[in-house]
Amino acid sequence: MFAFPYSKKFVIPVLLVQSFFSLWAVCRTCGLSSRSILTPILFITFFLYFKYISQLEEKRKEIYTRHTTAVALAVSFFFTLLFLLAESLSLTAGLDHRLFKLVILAVCSIGFFFLIFHSFSLLLILLVPYTLTENPKQVKHIPLFCFFACLLGWLPYFLYEYPAIMTPDSVNQLEQVLAMIPYNNHHPWAHTMVLKALYSFGFFLTGNQNAALAFFTLFQMCFLSACVSWLIATLLKLGVKNNICYFITAFYALVPYHAVFAVTVWKDVMFSGSVLLFTTALARLFFFHSGQLSSRIIYILSGIMICLFRTNGWYAFLFSLPFLLYAFRRHLIQMLPLHLVILFIALVVKIPVMNAFHVVQPDFVESICIPLQQTARVICEDKELTEEEWESIHKVIDTTYIKELYAPGFADNMKELVRVGDPGYLTEHKGEYLKLWLSLGLRYPSTYIRAYIDQTIGYWYPDVAYTVGDIDGIIANETGVTSHPLIGGPFIVKTKEILQKLGDMLPLYGLLFSMGAMFWTLTGCIAVVFAKKQYQRFILFLPGLAVILTLLVATPVSSEFRYAYSLAYTMPLYLLLPFIRSPERQGNPSYNTLDKKS
Image (cartoon, rainbow, N blue to C red; front, side, top):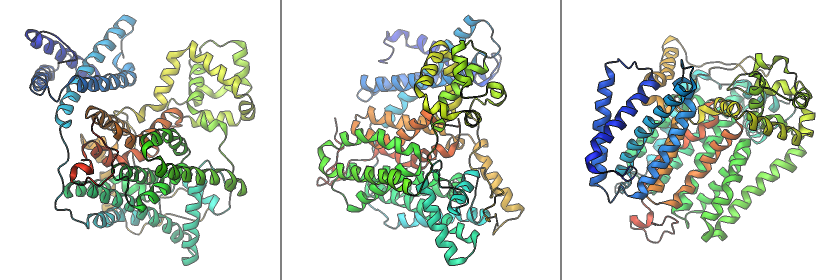
C-alpha cells in the first residue's frame, strides 16, 4: 500500500486500527449506539473488506501504481473534506467541550477517509484496465427507438398535467409573452421568446390558450427526446454496446423526474438538454475531429442555448472557453470559428437585440446571494460590528426583520429586504460593500463558512433531504391558462405519488435523486480519467462541471434540483467517457482523435 508504507508484519494491526476508526465514524454519523449489535458485524466487515483490497493491491501492482494511489488519495481527501464540512455539526451534537469536539471530528474524518480511500482504490483497480468492448452487431434503429420510448414514457405525465406544469416562474414568463408585464431577463429572455413563438403558433392554429401552451410542452418533450436520441447515436458510433444504450434509454424514459420536467415550463429544462447536446457534440469533435458538419452545427446551436437559456450558462461557457481552445489548439483553425460564432450571436442577442426590445436586466442584488447570506448571518448571530459598518448596512437594508426572515438555505428573503431598502445605493457603492464583506469575513470566518455551507450544501453533499419533481398543475394566475387533466382518477394519482416517493424509499435508487451524489459521481469519473492518464478527456467534463461551479458561486437556493438538472441529464455520458475506446483503437486509424495515450 503506497499510501501507508509499513512492514508487512504490521498489515493486520494497521487494518484493525483503520477498521476501528471507520466503525467509529459510521456509528457517529448514522447514530448507532456503541452497544449496538451491528458494531461487531460492521467491524469484521470493514476488516475483511480492507484486507481483501490490500491483498488485491499487492497482486495488481502493475495497475495500482503510485500514480493510481495519488489519484485515490486526492479524491479521498476531497470527499473527506466535504463530509467534514457537511456533518461537523451533527457529529459534535451533544458535546460542549471544544477538545471533545475536535477529537470526534478528527476520529470521524480519519475513519471516513479510510473508507473512501480503500473503496476508491478498489474501484480504480477494477476500472483502470477496463475498456468497453466493441459493438460488432450494432442495431441502427436504437436512436429512433429511444426517441419514441422517451415520448411514450413521458406521455402519461403530459396527459395528467395537460397542458403543462406551471410555477410562479413559468407564469411570469407567460405574462411577458402576453404583454401583461414588460420583458425582463431575470428568466432568460431568449427562452421566453421560444415560449412566445410556440405559444403564438399554437394559438394561431387552435384559438385556445391551453392548446397553445400544449404546443410548447410537446415541443419541449420532442427536444429532450431528440437530445437523448442523438446521445444514443453518438454512443453507438463510439462502439458502445446495444444493451447499454437500451439501459440508458430506460433511465430517461422511466425515472419519473425526467417526465415531470419534460412537461414543466422552466428554462432549466431546455438548458439541461442543451448541455447534453453540447457535451455530446464536444465528444464527437474530440473523438472524430474531422467528423460531420452536423456535429459542428449542433455544437454551435447548443452553445448558443447554453449562453442564452440561463445566466450561469453564459458564465460557464466563458469559463470553459480558454480551456476548450487550449485543448483543441492543434485544430484551432477549425475550432476557433465555432466558438466565435457562439460568442458573436450570444452577445448580439444579449446587447443590441435585448436593448431594442427594452428588456430589463436582473438587478445587482440577484448576483450576490451568497455574500448577502453571509453578511446577514453575521447580523443574526449578533456579532460585533463597528459603528461605521452598521451605518453602511443601514443605508441599504432595514435590519429590523433580518432575524425573522433569514433562512440559511434560501436567499430570496434577504434579496427582497434589500430591494425594499435602497438597492440603488448598493449598486453605486459596490467597492464600499466589497470592503465591508471582506472585513467581516476576515473577522468571522467560521460564520461565513457555515453560511456558505448552508447555502450550497445540496449541490455537493449526497445526504441532503429535498423534494424532486413533486410539482403539480398550474398555479392560480391571470393569463387564462388552467390545468385541465386529460386522464385522472385515484389509480393515476396514487401511481404518480408512489413513483415520486420511491426515491426516498429505495437504497441506491435514491442516489438518482441526489445532486450531491451526482456531483461525487462526476468527480469520480474525472478521477478515473486521470488515473487512466487520459488527461485530454477532462475537457469533455468541463462544461458540465463549470455549470455546477457557477451554482457554488451564486446559487440563491441550497438544494434546487432543477438548477443542477443538467448534471443528471448528462450523467450517462459522463459515466461512459472514461471507458470508451478511442476510434483509432477500434480499427479506424483514419479518424483524427485528440485522445492520445500518455
